[in-house]
Length: 287
Picture 1: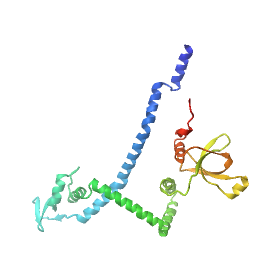
Picture 2: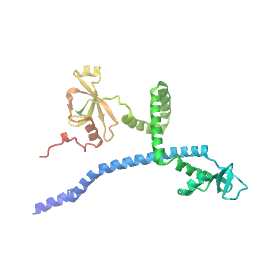
Picture 3: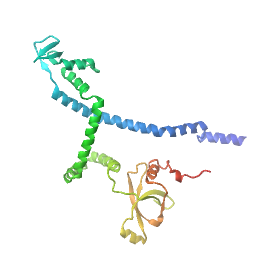
C-alpha cells in the first residue's frame, strides 16, 4: 500500500495527473487551427492597415481633388443657392456643395459627421466610389496587375540592373541591411523559383559519431572531393530548427548516409516542430 501511495504521489509530482493530460491533449487539438486563424487574421489586419487604408486614402484624396465642386458665395446667407442653374447647399460659412452631393451624405453621414465642404466631398467619394464591395476587388486586381508588370520588368535586363543598384544601396545601410537580408532570405525561399532540387531525405552522423542529423540531398558534390574520398559523395543541406530556410551545406560519403522513408514535406514538418511532429511511418510501435 505504501508503495502504491508513493507511486501515486510520484506521478502527481511529475505532472502525470489525468486531468493535466486531458488539458494538454485539448491544447494539442485546438492550438493548430487557432494559431492558423490568428496568423491569417494578423496578415489580413496588417494588410488592411498598412496597404489598403493608405491606398484608399490616396485614391479618395485624388478623387476629391478631381471632382470636388465647391462654390464660394460670400453674400449668401440662405441654406441653399442657385448657382449656374444648379442647386447648391451651404455647408460652412460661404462654402456651397451641390444639393445632390449634400443629400447623399446627409442620408449616411458616418461618424463623425462632416463639418466642412471638403469633408462632405470625402464622404461622398467614399459612398459613391469606394464602397468595400467595389474597392477591394478593384484594388486586388490592380495589385495583381502591378505584380505581373513588376515581374516582367524584373525579368528584363534593365530591371535586374536597377534592382541590383537598389540592393547595393540597401547593403550600405548598417542596420537596414541586416533586417533586409533576413527578410529577403525568407521571401526568396517562399516565393522565388527555387534552383535547389531536393532529391531525397537522409540521416547523417553529424556533428559527430553517435549524433544523427537530418539532411536534404541536393547533388553529388564536387569531383575533387569524390576523388579524395575514393567513393561517391553527396552534397547535403543541413537545415536548422525551427527555421529550415537557414542552414549549411556539407559533403559526406554516400556510404555514411541513411536514406529515410519520408517525404520532403514531412522532413520540413519534423524540422519546424523541432522533432515533435514525426511522420506516421516512422513512429515507434508501442505495442
